[in-house]
Length: 366
Image 1 (spheres, rainbow, N blue to C red):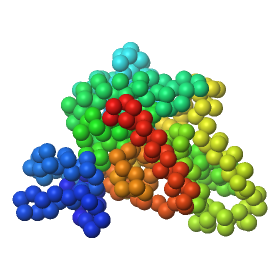
Image 2 (image 1 turned 90 degrees about the horizontal axis):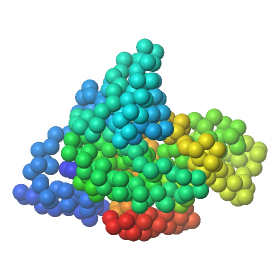
Image 3 (image 1 turned 135 degrees about the vertical axis):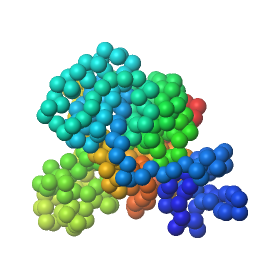
Image 4 (image 1 turned 30 degrees about the vertical axis):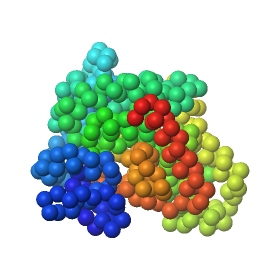
């Protein structure tokens, strides 16, 4: 094993096809993206210091002070993970009002600074969490949103990266497409750009399985992979409860789990956002908790495995698209992409999810 000099990911040099020679040494890369970044300015890449996990900075900037951004700020403040939280919004009065409300609760939480600001506050930020964008309307799919939000990102991301924040976490939908758009617009190494992906979908899947089986969802291990949206894929073949594969747990459970029941359970997962939006107009609580988990994994250098959206290359023959797969996350962002085993049906569904997103990405000119 060796290390990608751009993003720091571990690379098997006997398997990767991305490599280049520089000053008598061969460097290996996880993707064409990282190889291209290296070849543009190898000296700058080689001199760039790695972020030390012992660094004390815990500054989080949240771009977008609407329902998701404000709820996340509230949960992040309660968690004690961040020493400084900055809310940025095109509606400055909204951001200022949210901050005022949050500051009135500071005596009840661990020490933290909360303030409003603009994109200049992204300088020295450990993480910038982007929730800004057009809202999903009742009956509208996440893909329907893409053209509106891609246009917003075309102006937002270049203005933001001038201040060189360390890691960008994309939440705005459609999150997989916008993670890819951000990666291209920012020109950051792939480890520094990730999307919230199917972390929430996976939590919903575990909740539904736990409810069906009568088990605490924290003892259910199951993944939703692919797109955060209509083509997402439940990996039934790898579900296990308390270390026992689902098909072996079913006799213990005694409730049965027919194909029809599995389909119904998955539909509840896939359609959850639509149901919530129809009932209350937006989703905000569970996604904010998912964001706390992702941000905490970075700030605390946890090496936690989460299903975030990341750039994939040579992953079940999938190339140059951002999708959710199990990823090892630490202070450097994306540390390692884990190739999970799938059965043939799951693999085909996963590949079809990638094809659909590649089509959308091409349609918007990226």
